[in-house]
Amino acid sequence: EKVDLGMAALNFLSVATDQLVDDDFEGALESFSAALELDANSVKALTGRAATFIKLEKYTSALQDANAAVKLDEKCEVAYFRKGMACFALDEFETALDAFRKGKDLQPPGKDSRSYGRWIRKCESEIESDDDVIDMETEDGASPAAVASPPIPAPMQPVQPPEEKKLKYQHYQSASLLTVSIMEKKLKPEEVAVDISEKHLKVTVARPNVEPICMDVDLYEFIDPSQSSFKIMGTKVEIKLKKVEGIQWPDLKACASVMPTAASSVSSSGSSLANPYSSGTNWSKVDKGISEELEKDKPEGEEALNELFKNIYGKADEETRRAMNKSFQTSGGTVLSTNWGEVAKADYETERQAPSGMEWKNWEGKKLPMKKDD
Image (cartoon, rainbow, N blue to C red; front, side, top):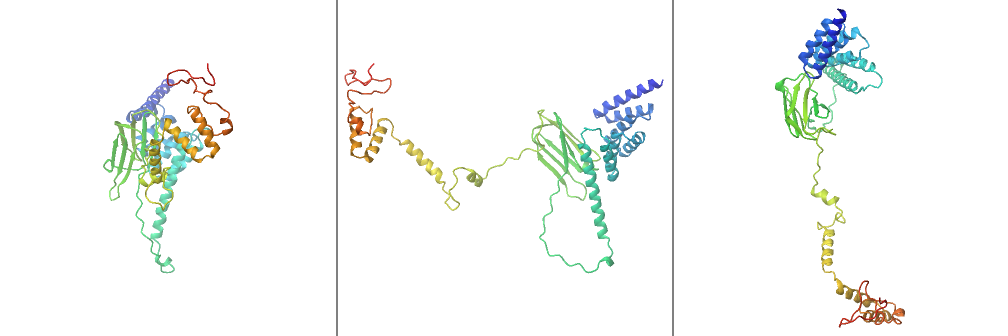
């Protein structure tokens, strides 16, 4: 009979774990409780029910189960983690910090401890904030006798505009979902507004007599608003965004596109002004336009050859000119030499050199002798 009860407890425990994973918290609570009725000393059932109570925001009950699990097994790391979460939600930050530190120390070697690190930092931050409040109250409540002399008025400082307060948030993702946690505690439904669109998320928290705080971001990729949701919990607002494409986002926010200004486009261009004191005219652009016009007027074919001949001829000495005249005219324009020593001995009329693949003919179409006559 004992074996049967034990097996039944294990069955309830297995069902409860699946229900907890599937977010069926009410069902999980019933199943964990059923397992504990069969085996009151089940540490797994106690830590599982503590996790369920936390999801249902029943933090006092969660703390009771976590403490019971610790009493049964002082080496149970999960029990300390559940205790830390419950205490944090109940604003017992020092107790929560102690629980998280003990749980972290009990972790098996090689296990990822980043979750503990985050919770420990959150506890330390809350404790530090509480200490600041206590210090301020002490200063405000100091007796006049403790003041030795009248305060010297400090020099007037320019009034700085109040820094815009923003919502603190965390996010993590799977292949299909991106979860955003807004780290604001004990919010009422009427104090939270969540606007989810395909590429945008806006969350506004408006508590009574306090300036509203906002988170307003363009998302890195597209989401499906119809399959996205949010839940207001005791310690946070949890938003689940359904990804359109099952890809890993490098960041929650879209990359800010830098729009070039008129000034930056000029300064980054390779054709920028030569110096800062020059006029607004882009002379590099003018030069380019002139070059294009000259390119259009550039001589081609026979005109280009004659232009080249005139340029060289105009700068040449007497012997060079004679060489150019003879070589160019007697070769029919196929040779242009500036070396009179070679041109004086050459007979370009009988030893014509036609371009490759061509042959010399007279006006009647008769073939003329060439240097290489096949």
